[in-house]
Length: 564
Image 1: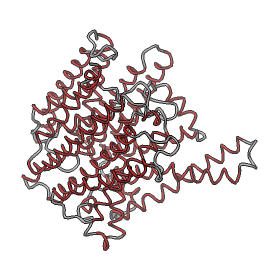
Image 2: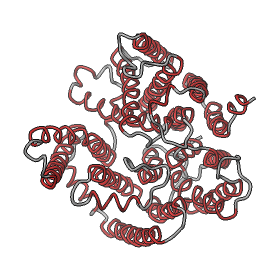
Image 3: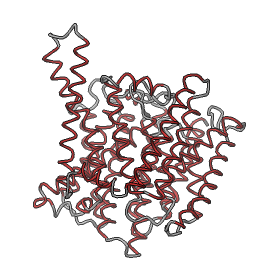
Image 4: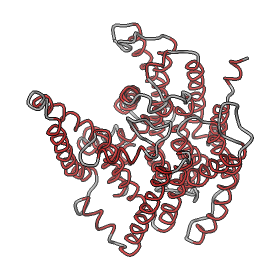
Protein backbone atom coordinates (compact mmCIF):
# COMPACT_ATOMS: atom_id res chain seq x y z
CA UNK A 1 0.00 0.00 0.00
CA UNK A 2 2.85 2.33 0.79
CA UNK A 3 4.39 1.59 -2.56
CA UNK A 4 1.14 2.41 -4.27
CA UNK A 5 0.85 5.78 -2.57
CA UNK A 6 4.47 6.49 -3.44
CA UNK A 7 3.89 5.58 -7.06
CA UNK A 8 1.17 8.17 -7.54
CA UNK A 9 2.47 11.20 -5.67
CA UNK A 10 1.55 14.73 -6.64
CA UNK A 11 4.71 15.67 -8.52
CA UNK A 12 4.49 12.59 -10.76
CA UNK A 13 0.84 13.27 -11.49
CA UNK A 14 1.69 16.83 -12.55
CA UNK A 15 4.49 15.55 -14.79
CA UNK A 16 1.90 13.27 -16.41
CA UNK A 17 -0.35 16.29 -16.98
CA UNK A 18 2.63 18.01 -18.61
CA UNK A 19 3.60 15.14 -20.90
CA UNK A 20 0.09 14.15 -22.03
CA UNK A 21 -0.78 17.39 -23.93
CA UNK A 22 2.62 17.35 -25.66
CA UNK A 23 2.19 13.79 -26.90
CA UNK A 24 -1.43 14.39 -27.95
CA UNK A 25 -0.65 17.66 -29.77
CA UNK A 26 2.27 16.19 -31.75
CA UNK A 27 1.60 15.92 -35.47
CA UNK A 28 1.98 12.66 -37.37
CA UNK A 29 5.37 13.83 -38.66
CA UNK A 30 6.51 14.02 -35.02
CA UNK A 31 5.14 10.61 -34.03
CA UNK A 32 8.60 9.12 -33.44
CA UNK A 33 9.57 11.96 -31.13
CA UNK A 34 6.27 11.80 -29.24
CA UNK A 35 6.59 8.04 -28.68
CA UNK A 36 10.21 8.43 -27.58
CA UNK A 37 9.17 11.11 -25.06
CA UNK A 38 6.51 8.82 -23.63
CA UNK A 39 8.99 5.95 -23.32
CA UNK A 40 11.59 8.24 -21.77
CA UNK A 41 9.00 9.34 -19.19
CA UNK A 42 8.25 5.71 -18.33
CA UNK A 43 11.94 4.91 -18.02
CA UNK A 44 12.48 7.95 -15.76
CA UNK A 45 9.52 6.95 -13.59
CA UNK A 46 10.95 3.47 -13.07
CA UNK A 47 14.37 4.86 -12.17
CA UNK A 48 12.88 7.36 -9.74
CA UNK A 49 10.78 4.69 -8.00
CA UNK A 50 13.83 2.45 -7.70
CA UNK A 51 15.88 5.34 -6.31
CA UNK A 52 13.41 5.84 -3.45
CA UNK A 53 14.01 2.36 -2.06
CA UNK A 54 17.78 2.25 -2.59
CA UNK A 55 20.85 3.86 -1.07
CA UNK A 56 22.95 3.41 -4.21
CA UNK A 57 22.61 7.08 -5.23
CA UNK A 58 23.57 8.42 -1.80
CA UNK A 59 27.15 8.72 -3.10
CA UNK A 60 26.09 11.81 -5.08
CA UNK A 61 25.27 13.89 -1.96
CA UNK A 62 22.16 15.49 -3.41
CA UNK A 63 20.43 18.48 -1.82
CA UNK A 64 18.91 17.67 1.55
CA UNK A 65 15.15 17.90 2.00
CA UNK A 66 14.34 17.43 -1.69
CA UNK A 67 13.09 14.40 -3.57
CA UNK A 68 15.30 12.97 -6.27
CA UNK A 69 13.33 14.80 -9.00
CA UNK A 70 14.59 12.32 -11.60
CA UNK A 71 11.31 12.13 -13.54
CA UNK A 72 10.82 15.90 -13.70
CA UNK A 73 14.46 16.54 -14.56
CA UNK A 74 14.49 13.92 -17.32
CA UNK A 75 11.38 15.06 -19.22
CA UNK A 76 11.48 18.87 -18.93
CA UNK A 77 13.96 19.65 -21.70
CA UNK A 78 12.79 16.91 -24.12
CA UNK A 79 9.23 18.13 -23.55
CA UNK A 80 10.36 21.65 -24.31
CA UNK A 81 11.96 20.49 -27.56
CA UNK A 82 8.76 18.69 -28.57
CA UNK A 83 6.75 21.85 -27.92
CA UNK A 84 9.08 23.90 -30.12
CA UNK A 85 8.91 21.23 -32.84
CA UNK A 86 5.11 21.44 -32.76
CA UNK A 87 5.33 25.21 -33.03
CA UNK A 88 7.81 25.14 -35.92
CA UNK A 89 5.69 22.54 -37.69
CA UNK A 90 2.91 25.12 -37.83
CA UNK A 91 5.39 27.64 -39.20
CA UNK A 92 6.48 25.19 -41.90
CA UNK A 93 2.88 24.71 -43.03
CA UNK A 94 2.57 28.50 -43.29
CA UNK A 95 5.85 28.66 -45.27
CA UNK A 96 7.38 31.00 -42.67
CA UNK A 97 10.46 28.85 -42.09
CA UNK A 98 12.53 26.44 -44.15
CA UNK A 99 12.73 22.70 -43.67
CA UNK A 100 16.36 23.07 -42.51
CA UNK A 101 15.30 24.95 -39.39
CA UNK A 102 12.81 22.27 -38.42
CA UNK A 103 15.28 19.46 -39.07
CA UNK A 104 17.97 21.23 -37.05
CA UNK A 105 15.62 21.44 -34.07
CA UNK A 106 14.64 17.81 -34.58
CA UNK A 107 18.29 16.84 -34.33
CA UNK A 108 18.58 18.94 -31.18
CA UNK A 109 15.65 17.00 -29.73
CA UNK A 110 17.50 13.73 -30.27
CA UNK A 111 20.60 15.19 -28.64
CA UNK A 112 18.46 16.12 -25.64
CA UNK A 113 16.83 12.70 -25.60
CA UNK A 114 20.24 11.02 -25.74
CA UNK A 115 21.58 13.06 -22.83
CA UNK A 116 18.58 12.27 -20.61
CA UNK A 117 18.44 8.63 -21.70
CA UNK A 118 22.15 8.17 -21.01
CA UNK A 119 21.93 9.68 -17.53
CA UNK A 120 18.89 7.55 -16.72
CA UNK A 121 20.72 4.49 -17.98
CA UNK A 122 23.70 5.31 -15.80
CA UNK A 123 21.49 5.82 -12.73
CA UNK A 124 19.71 2.58 -13.53
CA UNK A 125 23.03 0.70 -13.60
CA UNK A 126 23.90 2.06 -10.17
CA UNK A 127 20.49 1.16 -8.77
CA UNK A 128 20.27 -2.36 -10.10
CA UNK A 129 23.94 -3.22 -9.90
CA UNK A 130 25.53 -1.16 -7.10
CA UNK A 131 29.14 -0.32 -7.97
CA UNK A 132 32.30 -0.50 -5.96
CA UNK A 133 32.39 2.81 -4.12
CA UNK A 134 36.01 3.49 -4.95
CA UNK A 135 35.89 2.73 -8.64
CA UNK A 136 32.27 2.76 -9.84
CA UNK A 137 33.20 2.84 -13.52
CA UNK A 138 36.39 0.86 -13.57
CA UNK A 139 36.58 -0.74 -16.99
CA UNK A 140 37.88 -3.98 -15.56
CA UNK A 141 34.83 -4.38 -13.36
CA UNK A 142 31.58 -5.97 -14.41
CA UNK A 143 29.85 -2.63 -14.09
CA UNK A 144 32.34 -0.96 -16.43
CA UNK A 145 31.66 -3.57 -19.13
CA UNK A 146 27.90 -3.27 -18.67
CA UNK A 147 28.19 0.50 -18.78
CA UNK A 148 29.87 0.38 -22.21
CA UNK A 149 27.48 -2.26 -23.54
CA UNK A 150 24.42 -0.31 -22.51
CA UNK A 151 25.84 2.86 -23.98
CA UNK A 152 26.15 0.96 -27.24
CA UNK A 153 22.49 0.00 -26.87
CA UNK A 154 21.60 3.64 -26.34
CA UNK A 155 23.61 4.47 -29.46
CA UNK A 156 21.56 1.96 -31.43
CA UNK A 157 18.31 3.42 -30.08
CA UNK A 158 19.28 6.97 -31.00
CA UNK A 159 20.62 5.99 -34.41
CA UNK A 160 17.42 4.10 -35.25
CA UNK A 161 15.37 7.06 -34.07
CA UNK A 162 17.31 9.43 -36.29
CA UNK A 163 16.97 7.06 -39.22
CA UNK A 164 13.22 6.65 -38.75
CA UNK A 165 12.81 10.42 -38.80
CA UNK A 166 14.48 10.34 -42.24
CA UNK A 167 17.72 12.04 -41.34
CA UNK A 168 20.27 11.50 -44.05
CA UNK A 169 23.15 11.25 -41.62
CA UNK A 170 26.30 9.24 -41.41
CA UNK A 171 28.32 7.82 -38.60
CA UNK A 172 29.88 11.19 -37.70
CA UNK A 173 26.65 12.89 -36.57
CA UNK A 174 25.39 9.74 -34.84
CA UNK A 175 28.69 9.48 -32.97
CA UNK A 176 28.54 13.19 -32.14
CA UNK A 177 25.07 12.70 -30.63
CA UNK A 178 26.23 9.72 -28.58
CA UNK A 179 29.28 11.60 -27.32
CA UNK A 180 27.03 14.31 -25.96
CA UNK A 181 25.10 11.65 -24.06
CA UNK A 182 28.32 10.38 -22.54
CA UNK A 183 29.36 13.97 -21.73
CA UNK A 184 26.06 14.53 -19.90
CA UNK A 185 26.74 11.54 -17.65
CA UNK A 186 30.27 12.64 -16.80
CA UNK A 187 29.25 16.27 -16.28
CA UNK A 188 26.41 15.33 -13.94
CA UNK A 189 28.80 13.23 -11.87
CA UNK A 190 31.24 16.12 -11.77
CA UNK A 191 28.61 18.66 -10.72
CA UNK A 192 27.19 16.51 -7.91
CA UNK A 193 30.64 15.58 -6.56
CA UNK A 194 32.15 19.06 -6.88
CA UNK A 195 29.14 20.85 -5.38
CA UNK A 196 27.75 18.45 -2.73
CA UNK A 197 24.29 19.18 -1.30
CA UNK A 198 23.75 22.02 -3.82
CA UNK A 199 21.24 20.30 -6.14
CA UNK A 200 18.96 17.30 -6.36
CA UNK A 201 19.65 14.67 -9.00
CA UNK A 202 16.79 16.02 -11.12
CA UNK A 203 18.10 19.58 -10.92
CA UNK A 204 21.61 18.41 -11.81
CA UNK A 205 20.18 16.45 -14.74
CA UNK A 206 18.36 19.53 -16.04
CA UNK A 207 21.42 21.76 -15.73
CA UNK A 208 23.94 19.32 -17.18
CA UNK A 209 21.72 18.43 -20.13
CA UNK A 210 21.21 22.10 -20.90
CA UNK A 211 24.94 22.80 -20.66
CA UNK A 212 25.83 19.87 -22.90
CA UNK A 213 23.34 21.02 -25.55
CA UNK A 214 24.61 24.60 -25.31
CA UNK A 215 28.29 23.59 -25.46
CA UNK A 216 27.66 20.95 -28.12
CA UNK A 217 25.92 23.42 -30.40
CA UNK A 218 28.76 25.92 -30.03
CA UNK A 219 31.51 23.38 -30.66
CA UNK A 220 29.61 21.97 -33.63
CA UNK A 221 29.49 25.46 -35.12
CA UNK A 222 33.19 25.85 -34.48
CA UNK A 223 33.90 22.51 -36.12
CA UNK A 224 31.89 23.34 -39.23
CA UNK A 225 33.74 26.65 -39.55
CA UNK A 226 37.24 25.26 -39.06
CA UNK A 227 36.85 22.04 -41.02
CA UNK A 228 33.74 22.70 -43.07
CA UNK A 229 35.28 21.26 -46.20
CA UNK A 230 35.68 17.91 -44.40
CA UNK A 231 32.49 17.56 -42.36
CA UNK A 232 29.97 19.86 -44.03
CA UNK A 233 28.06 16.96 -45.56
CA UNK A 234 27.88 15.25 -42.17
CA UNK A 235 26.79 18.30 -40.15
CA UNK A 236 24.37 19.64 -42.72
CA UNK A 237 21.66 20.19 -40.12
CA UNK A 238 24.01 21.81 -37.65
CA UNK A 239 25.01 24.44 -40.20
CA UNK A 240 21.71 26.26 -39.68
CA UNK A 241 22.93 27.24 -36.23
CA UNK A 242 25.51 29.57 -37.81
CA UNK A 243 22.71 31.73 -39.25
CA UNK A 244 21.76 33.40 -36.00
CA UNK A 245 21.62 36.95 -34.76
CA UNK A 246 24.67 38.84 -33.59
CA UNK A 247 23.19 39.18 -30.10
CA UNK A 248 22.64 35.44 -29.67
CA UNK A 249 26.14 34.55 -30.83
CA UNK A 250 27.71 37.17 -28.52
CA UNK A 251 25.68 35.99 -25.52
CA UNK A 252 26.39 32.33 -26.18
CA UNK A 253 30.11 32.91 -26.65
CA UNK A 254 30.52 35.05 -23.54
CA UNK A 255 28.50 32.70 -21.32
CA UNK A 256 30.38 29.62 -22.49
CA UNK A 257 33.68 31.45 -22.04
CA UNK A 258 32.80 32.30 -18.44
CA UNK A 259 31.67 28.73 -17.75
CA UNK A 260 35.03 27.46 -19.00
CA UNK A 261 36.92 30.19 -17.16
CA UNK A 262 36.99 28.43 -13.72
CA UNK A 263 38.75 25.43 -15.30
CA UNK A 264 41.41 27.66 -16.85
CA UNK A 265 41.80 29.77 -13.70
CA UNK A 266 42.05 26.74 -11.42
CA UNK A 267 44.75 25.19 -13.62
CA UNK A 268 46.83 28.38 -13.61
CA UNK A 269 46.31 28.77 -9.87
CA UNK A 270 47.49 25.21 -9.16
CA UNK A 271 50.64 25.78 -11.21
CA UNK A 272 51.34 29.03 -9.37
CA UNK A 273 50.75 27.47 -5.94
CA UNK A 274 53.05 24.59 -6.82
CA UNK A 275 55.98 26.95 -7.41
CA UNK A 276 55.23 29.35 -4.57
CA UNK A 277 54.03 27.06 -1.79
CA UNK A 278 57.41 26.82 -0.10
CA UNK A 279 58.21 30.50 -0.40
CA UNK A 280 54.86 31.79 0.81
CA UNK A 281 53.71 29.10 3.19
CA UNK A 282 53.59 31.63 6.04
CA UNK A 283 52.56 34.68 4.03
CA UNK A 284 48.85 34.23 3.46
CA UNK A 285 48.42 37.90 2.61
CA UNK A 286 50.79 37.65 -0.33
CA UNK A 287 49.13 34.42 -1.39
CA UNK A 288 45.71 36.12 -1.59
CA UNK A 289 47.12 39.07 -3.51
CA UNK A 290 48.80 36.73 -5.96
CA UNK A 291 45.62 34.71 -6.41
CA UNK A 292 43.65 37.88 -7.12
CA UNK A 293 46.26 39.07 -9.61
CA UNK A 294 46.09 35.75 -11.46
CA UNK A 295 42.28 35.96 -11.47
CA UNK A 296 42.18 39.40 -13.05
CA UNK A 297 44.91 38.51 -15.54
CA UNK A 298 43.00 35.36 -16.55
CA UNK A 299 39.79 37.35 -16.87
CA UNK A 300 41.59 39.80 -19.15
CA UNK A 301 42.74 36.93 -21.35
CA UNK A 302 39.14 35.72 -21.53
CA UNK A 303 37.90 39.16 -22.57
CA UNK A 304 40.44 39.16 -25.41
CA UNK A 305 40.07 35.57 -26.65
CA UNK A 306 36.28 35.09 -26.55
CA UNK A 307 35.53 37.90 -29.06
CA UNK A 308 38.11 36.32 -31.39
CA UNK A 309 36.23 33.00 -31.08
CA UNK A 310 32.94 34.80 -31.76
CA UNK A 311 34.34 36.44 -34.89
CA UNK A 312 35.45 33.05 -36.14
CA UNK A 313 31.84 31.84 -36.12
CA UNK A 314 30.11 34.96 -37.41
CA UNK A 315 31.28 37.92 -39.41
CA UNK A 316 31.18 41.29 -37.67
CA UNK A 317 32.01 44.56 -39.40
CA UNK A 318 33.65 45.72 -36.18
CA UNK A 319 34.96 44.10 -33.00
CA UNK A 320 32.08 42.40 -31.08
CA UNK A 321 32.55 44.70 -28.07
CA UNK A 322 32.36 47.74 -30.34
CA UNK A 323 29.31 46.19 -32.01
CA UNK A 324 27.60 46.00 -28.61
CA UNK A 325 28.35 49.67 -27.90
CA UNK A 326 27.15 50.64 -31.37
CA UNK A 327 23.96 48.62 -30.86
CA UNK A 328 23.20 50.29 -27.51
CA UNK A 329 23.70 53.77 -28.92
CA UNK A 330 21.70 53.08 -32.09
CA UNK A 331 18.62 54.09 -30.07
CA UNK A 332 20.26 56.03 -27.24
CA UNK A 333 17.19 57.68 -25.76
CA UNK A 334 15.18 54.49 -25.34
CA UNK A 335 17.97 52.13 -24.34
CA UNK A 336 19.93 54.42 -22.05
CA UNK A 337 16.69 55.50 -20.38
CA UNK A 338 15.89 51.84 -19.84
CA UNK A 339 19.35 51.28 -18.30
CA UNK A 340 18.84 54.21 -15.93
CA UNK A 341 15.43 52.80 -14.97
CA UNK A 342 16.95 49.38 -14.26
CA UNK A 343 19.74 50.83 -12.14
CA UNK A 344 17.25 52.88 -10.12
CA UNK A 345 14.96 49.89 -9.51
CA UNK A 346 17.91 47.67 -8.52
CA UNK A 347 19.41 50.27 -6.19
CA UNK A 348 16.18 51.10 -4.37
CA UNK A 349 15.04 47.48 -4.13
CA UNK A 350 18.33 45.91 -3.07
CA UNK A 351 19.03 48.58 -0.46
CA UNK A 352 15.52 48.29 0.97
CA UNK A 353 15.37 44.50 1.01
CA UNK A 354 18.90 44.11 2.36
CA UNK A 355 18.07 46.33 5.35
CA UNK A 356 14.87 44.36 5.94
CA UNK A 357 16.76 41.06 5.82
CA UNK A 358 19.23 42.28 8.45
CA UNK A 359 16.68 43.78 10.85
CA UNK A 360 13.48 41.79 10.34
CA UNK A 361 12.06 38.39 11.21
CA UNK A 362 10.35 38.00 7.81
CA UNK A 363 11.02 34.57 6.33
CA UNK A 364 13.67 34.72 3.64
CA UNK A 365 11.54 32.79 1.17
CA UNK A 366 8.97 35.61 1.34
CA UNK A 367 11.63 38.29 1.20
CA UNK A 368 13.01 36.77 -1.98
CA UNK A 369 9.57 36.91 -3.60
CA UNK A 370 9.94 40.69 -3.63
CA UNK A 371 12.77 40.14 -6.09
CA UNK A 372 10.32 38.23 -8.27
CA UNK A 373 8.09 41.31 -8.29
CA UNK A 374 11.15 43.41 -9.08
CA UNK A 375 11.75 41.18 -12.11
CA UNK A 376 8.24 41.98 -13.35
CA UNK A 377 8.89 45.72 -12.99
CA UNK A 378 12.24 45.50 -14.77
CA UNK A 379 11.63 43.05 -17.58
CA UNK A 380 8.02 43.55 -18.67
CA UNK A 381 8.42 47.07 -20.17
CA UNK A 382 11.65 46.08 -21.88
CA UNK A 383 10.14 42.92 -23.37
CA UNK A 384 7.23 44.87 -24.81
CA UNK A 385 9.15 47.84 -26.21
CA UNK A 386 12.81 46.75 -26.50
CA UNK A 387 12.95 42.93 -26.81
CA UNK A 388 16.29 42.77 -28.67
CA UNK A 389 17.98 45.02 -26.16
CA UNK A 390 16.56 42.86 -23.36
CA UNK A 391 18.15 39.78 -24.99
CA UNK A 392 21.53 41.47 -24.76
CA UNK A 393 20.88 42.77 -21.24
CA UNK A 394 20.04 39.27 -19.99
CA UNK A 395 23.35 38.03 -21.37
CA UNK A 396 25.24 40.88 -19.69
CA UNK A 397 23.47 40.22 -16.38
CA UNK A 398 24.21 36.49 -16.55
CA UNK A 399 27.88 37.23 -17.28
CA UNK A 400 28.02 39.61 -14.30
CA UNK A 401 26.40 37.00 -12.04
CA UNK A 402 28.94 34.38 -13.13
CA UNK A 403 31.90 36.68 -12.47
CA UNK A 404 30.55 37.67 -9.04
CA UNK A 405 29.87 34.05 -8.07
CA UNK A 406 33.39 33.04 -9.10
CA UNK A 407 34.85 35.86 -7.01
CA UNK A 408 32.64 34.81 -4.08
CA UNK A 409 33.56 31.12 -4.24
CA UNK A 410 37.30 31.82 -4.49
CA UNK A 411 37.11 34.88 -2.20
CA UNK A 412 38.89 37.05 -4.74
CA UNK A 413 40.09 40.35 -3.29
CA UNK A 414 38.55 42.92 -2.93
CA UNK A 415 34.97 41.85 -3.76
CA UNK A 416 34.88 38.18 -2.79
CA UNK A 417 34.17 38.49 0.92
CA UNK A 418 31.79 41.44 0.44
CA UNK A 419 29.75 39.55 -2.16
CA UNK A 420 29.67 36.48 0.09
CA UNK A 421 28.27 38.41 3.07
CA UNK A 422 25.74 40.21 0.90
CA UNK A 423 24.46 37.08 -0.83
CA UNK A 424 24.13 35.19 2.44
CA UNK A 425 21.44 37.67 3.49
CA UNK A 426 19.10 36.21 0.85
CA UNK A 427 19.85 32.49 0.92
CA UNK A 428 17.43 29.81 2.08
CA UNK A 429 17.45 26.02 2.48
CA UNK A 430 17.90 25.49 -1.28
CA UNK A 431 21.24 27.30 -1.32
CA UNK A 432 24.51 26.19 0.23
CA UNK A 433 27.56 28.03 1.42
CA UNK A 434 29.50 26.50 -1.47
CA UNK A 435 27.21 27.54 -4.31
CA UNK A 436 24.32 30.03 -4.35
CA UNK A 437 22.01 29.40 -7.28
CA UNK A 438 18.73 31.20 -6.57
CA UNK A 439 19.62 34.41 -8.39
CA UNK A 440 20.81 32.40 -11.39
CA UNK A 441 17.57 30.41 -11.51
CA UNK A 442 15.42 33.56 -11.32
CA UNK A 443 17.38 35.31 -14.07
CA UNK A 444 17.44 32.27 -16.37
CA UNK A 445 13.80 31.47 -15.57
CA UNK A 446 12.86 34.86 -17.01
CA UNK A 447 15.47 34.89 -19.81
CA UNK A 448 15.16 31.40 -21.34
CA UNK A 449 11.56 31.76 -22.63
CA UNK A 450 12.57 35.07 -24.23
CA UNK A 451 15.70 33.64 -25.84
CA UNK A 452 13.83 30.55 -27.07
CA UNK A 453 11.10 32.70 -28.63
CA UNK A 454 13.55 34.32 -31.03
CA UNK A 455 12.73 33.53 -34.61
CA UNK A 456 9.25 32.24 -35.34
CA UNK A 457 6.79 32.69 -32.48
CA UNK A 458 3.01 32.60 -32.99
CA UNK A 459 2.17 32.60 -29.27
CA UNK A 460 2.58 36.17 -27.95
CA UNK A 461 2.57 35.12 -24.28
CA UNK A 462 5.37 32.56 -24.70
CA UNK A 463 8.22 35.08 -24.14
CA UNK A 464 6.48 36.19 -20.93
CA UNK A 465 6.38 32.63 -19.52
CA UNK A 466 9.09 33.24 -16.94
CA UNK A 467 7.88 36.68 -15.92
CA UNK A 468 4.30 35.50 -15.51
CA UNK A 469 4.97 32.19 -13.77
CA UNK A 470 7.71 33.41 -11.41
CA UNK A 471 7.12 37.12 -11.06
CA UNK A 472 3.35 36.88 -10.61
CA UNK A 473 2.14 33.30 -10.12
CA UNK A 474 4.85 31.99 -7.80
CA UNK A 475 4.95 35.24 -5.82
CA UNK A 476 1.19 35.43 -5.26
CA UNK A 477 1.02 31.73 -4.37
CA UNK A 478 3.70 32.15 -1.69
CA UNK A 479 2.33 35.36 -0.19
CA UNK A 480 -1.33 34.36 -0.13
CA UNK A 481 -0.52 30.83 1.00
CA UNK A 482 1.68 32.08 3.84
CA UNK A 483 -0.87 34.60 5.11
CA UNK A 484 -4.22 32.98 4.40
CA UNK A 485 -3.48 29.34 3.60
CA UNK A 486 -5.32 26.69 5.62
CA UNK A 487 -5.83 23.66 3.37
CA UNK A 488 -2.53 21.96 2.63
CA UNK A 489 -1.88 19.83 -0.44
CA UNK A 490 -0.04 17.26 1.65
CA UNK A 491 0.46 16.52 5.32
CA UNK A 492 4.20 17.10 5.20
CA UNK A 493 4.34 20.04 2.76
CA UNK A 494 3.82 23.75 3.32
CA UNK A 495 2.02 24.55 0.04
CA UNK A 496 -1.68 25.38 0.38
CA UNK A 497 -4.71 25.17 -1.89
CA UNK A 498 -5.45 28.86 -1.29
CA UNK A 499 -1.95 29.84 -2.41
CA UNK A 500 -2.14 27.73 -5.56
CA UNK A 501 -5.56 29.16 -6.44
CA UNK A 502 -4.23 32.69 -5.93
CA UNK A 503 -1.24 31.97 -8.16
CA UNK A 504 -3.34 30.55 -10.99
CA UNK A 505 -5.93 33.33 -10.76
CA UNK A 506 -3.30 36.08 -10.71
CA UNK A 507 -1.55 34.74 -13.83
CA UNK A 508 -4.84 34.46 -15.72
CA UNK A 509 -5.71 38.03 -14.68
CA UNK A 510 -2.30 39.27 -15.82
CA UNK A 511 -2.72 37.50 -19.17
CA UNK A 512 -6.13 39.08 -19.71
CA UNK A 513 -4.47 42.48 -19.29
CA UNK A 514 -1.33 41.68 -21.22
CA UNK A 515 -2.89 40.24 -24.38
CA UNK A 516 -4.83 43.42 -25.36
CA UNK A 517 -1.72 45.46 -24.58
CA UNK A 518 0.38 43.27 -26.86
CA UNK A 519 -2.23 43.55 -29.59
CA UNK A 520 -1.76 47.33 -29.60
CA UNK A 521 2.00 46.96 -30.14
CA UNK A 522 1.66 44.80 -33.25
CA UNK A 523 1.60 41.22 -31.90
CA UNK A 524 -0.65 38.87 -33.82
CA UNK A 525 -3.41 37.68 -31.48
CA UNK A 526 -3.07 33.89 -31.79
CA UNK A 527 -2.85 32.73 -28.18
CA UNK A 528 -5.25 29.84 -27.63
CA UNK A 529 -7.08 30.18 -24.33
CA UNK A 530 -7.30 26.42 -23.87
CA UNK A 531 -3.53 25.96 -24.04
CA UNK A 532 -3.15 29.00 -21.79
CA UNK A 533 -5.53 27.52 -19.20
CA UNK A 534 -3.70 24.17 -19.31
CA UNK A 535 -0.30 25.89 -19.01
CA UNK A 536 -1.34 28.06 -16.06
CA UNK A 537 -3.01 25.16 -14.24
CA UNK A 538 -0.20 22.65 -14.71
CA UNK A 539 2.52 25.15 -13.75
CA UNK A 540 0.49 26.19 -10.70
CA UNK A 541 0.12 22.58 -9.59
CA UNK A 542 3.80 21.98 -10.20
CA UNK A 543 4.63 24.89 -7.88
CA UNK A 544 2.39 23.30 -5.25
CA UNK A 545 3.77 19.77 -5.43
CA UNK A 546 7.41 19.89 -6.45
CA UNK A 547 10.27 19.92 -3.97
CA UNK A 548 12.68 20.91 -6.73
CA UNK A 549 13.99 24.40 -7.45
CA UNK A 550 10.77 25.80 -8.91
CA UNK A 551 12.50 28.78 -10.57
CA UNK A 552 14.25 26.30 -12.86
CA UNK A 553 11.32 24.05 -13.84
CA UNK A 554 8.12 26.10 -13.74
CA UNK A 555 9.03 28.60 -16.52
CA UNK A 556 10.09 25.81 -18.88
CA UNK A 557 6.92 23.80 -18.26
CA UNK A 558 4.77 26.91 -18.63
CA UNK A 559 6.54 27.93 -21.84
CA UNK A 560 6.25 24.46 -23.36
CA UNK A 561 2.48 24.27 -22.84
CA UNK A 562 1.96 27.83 -24.10
CA UNK A 563 3.53 26.83 -27.43
CA UNK A 564 0.86 24.20 -28.15
